[in-house]
Length: 200
Image (tube, rainbow, N blue to C red):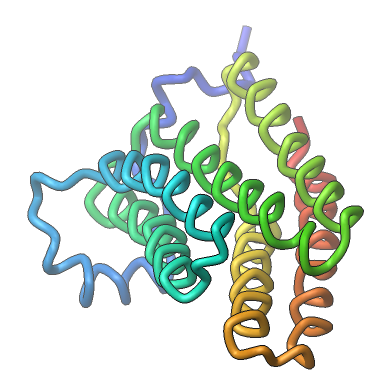
């Protein structure tokens, strides 16, 4: 009988290297020693998230913006490092996206709810929880856990929406708030598409 589901160990196989992986590998990642692993960056993101949230909570938005951008950028770095250095791990496949969702979910809870509206924040958080549940179901079924292109676009839009919102707060430029809102609404749309197309 042929097993149509890959075993969990098969997730260690090299993954397709994307264009931005090559860019990061030939630029920023060149300065990272081989001793630094993708999972180290994921752990840094997990540890840095509470610091970012505290900065936002106490309205230290300028430092908070820098800290958020740094923390969010580790997501691009650890993924590209894992693919270009063939260091994809089962742990990373689980905790890398989880770290992203904790970061975005926390930012939504602290600033999106405060400056945009409650329902936008609730919808984003619910969708992120659904992504986590979907991933847990896949892991239980020994299926591959990996964000599709719609999920990656969703993450980019979420980060962009948060950054626009922070710029509007820092520079007291209220005209940016509708753009931040619309970017987050678009992220919600891509999140729904991602959930519907990735399957369980």
